[in-house]
Length: 498
Picture 1 (cartoon, rainbow, N blue to C red):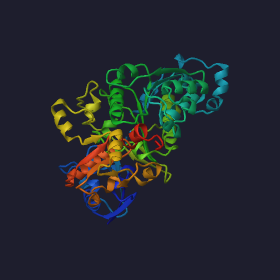
Picture 2: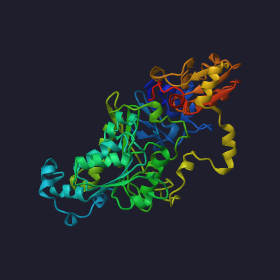
Picture 3: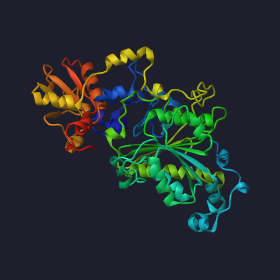
Picture 4: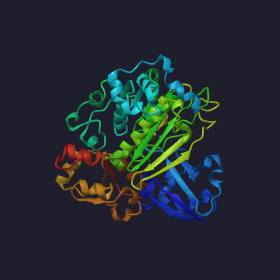
């Protein structure tokens, strides 16, 4: 039976660049086995060494999660579609009205506000009552980057009365391709300051509160306490799990969005440890991927308009939560929305609350916020710190590499970025072997010579060195610290940074 397997963008480099692959199979497990036999590079991304499917990878047959069917033994029939949904670097209707106070307690609208929100007021789904709820509501945005930019602008324009912004970053030139809340004159400014000025200009009736700090286990619950809705616009797994757990413990709805290249995800996670509503992020992805396995937007890129679309969806879901059940809306609770901007396709998948979830399940074990850097494997336990240090590849700085090149040392430099990145900027006398091809083209690397491996910032090159060693390469491999970005900063400013 012919089964179509959809390959997510983040994994296509390990599947020959294919978006869809057709296989003959009778079960999900058989289909994935045939897929990973043909494309062996996919196996480590889908399976543990013990052969079981990784917890940060979800598999759906059509729109049904196989975890709620027969797992890998779930039968498939001719024409079925299997979707692989990895994590990317995402209630009860009667309870929705609890987001805001009863309408009797809400402040009236001024004549200026009536004029400003007139297009809302003439809609029966919003009306005067709904607009007063928006005015009384408070929303905390985690991040003012690609997702937070359109999100904040639309929430301010809609008249959400109090907007909180959490961010500790500064505006960089590379942000401006997608983070439309910031402008060229804001480069170098704190993002919270830039965002505050833009939002105040959009709507002076909105109270904007800035929190120029990194969200952490120490401050999350205190920050979340005074807001009705939390919106996750983060770009890393530790913060994503932190936001999820803090929302569950605080009983707050978590409006989720994530993006990578031209694919996006959105959902509303609203779960509480003591009473059931909907699924939480951990119900979807019980554990994060190992560090470095999933590329970031800095490595893989992101289509500039994509965060605008996904961020606008998050704003839409936030407004619906505030308007409550009386508006007749249906938030994305227990639903995962997938968006492919390149093919202009939306797809919706069902989510289910996991009764064994450690934070929102029937026997929850997580009662307080934990160390999320350690949970995501970014800070190894003390007992394995020495082992991790031994596994770290030998490194060289950009300045030292330049000195050795000028001295005429016999070095070969391997660039493991993608061809389109190589066109943007390159270090002289390098050989391009993309990360996904590095083991299959190992014969092009002379083991008798010292080999310096580099990428954009040093992450992919470290992975390439590890892959080469595991494949049996015997030569000396050295990682360029900071990659070509460090080369541009410390050696040759004429090399473009991206």
